[in-house]
Image (cartoon, rainbow over all chains, first blue to last red; front, top):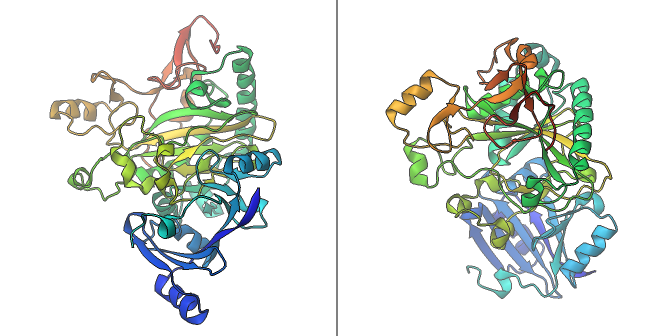
Length: 139
Length: 340
């Protein structure tokens, strides 16, 4: 079942301004920054000393997946990503309890906001790596 | 985003230009837009009842349908009755639907598919898929025909909610914005989205929730799938699909480089389409003749080709069969429509 914090995704409209806020204002060290023109996204990561990280996501164009969220909601938390021991078992348990899920059967499973106090939750197997931090993502 | 029709727009039978532009913008960027309350309650009640009766008849055969075998149990592509009073103007000659179709696909767009989509209790998860490939496979091909990259859709799917469609009764899972993912443009046939988790990782799914009597206009290239219906009763929806005038194949496929002589014949007879064998044939959808009046009462003020033809008694349409064949249903004679 859900057993820990992995990361939080925050939608921002201006990646430079948001990096300044979190690095210069709040004092978090910027761990990594990447641009993904194919996905129309700019992303910045702040690793937290005691585990987990904060991910800022900004659209490069109105074709970015995050663009509509920003239009409708403004800047703010987009996804709260939590660890699970075993994704399949977590999905089975939550489904049995009637919790509304999206993405079942794919690696990317979400608990819908209406089932989590208004927050979109992502279920992340605790041993699954993050490419920006643990793998082959562009530096 | 959901859009409402004003009293003035209802009187005029059209949607104001600024609102229409916003609807088209959402379809092009997000992949869908919902226009609320544009189908009558009476039509929804009539069609829901007929669909539930027909689901009973299909289930009474004791067989799983061919579509379920391919896409997942419990998701019925159910033919809709093609005779009066079950064919109504606010479904197939609806000025607001035709207004959005014309704004998205251009005048001369034509109705290519009209069918029921029922999510039954006990249904499973369909494979994640898209309904249409890109009409242009490369930026060069698109530019040659004056298209941007990614190219605009040449097909628009209209999902008509007969009742409120929510997570609670199995609203379709969608991946907003995924219709603009060009990686899939050149995929070989049978290449499945679930084999590409790196593409899914860029996006989060949502649900295509639609209020009752409303229509969701969807770019069929957007990734989606039917999911379980936990409500305990069948959820009925209607699917109407339109194709741009440049699409000359009967399934709405864009065929480049049609020989000039063939183009001339197609221009002279808009009822003709290119068949699977390359020959030309009548590509119109078939309906019983007692529905003719509603189609011909008034021409589409938005220039939509309703693309229908009518069969006379003793012939009639068996709506249970051949939803995905030419005409969208089977023509029968001296027998009653039946699922088998």
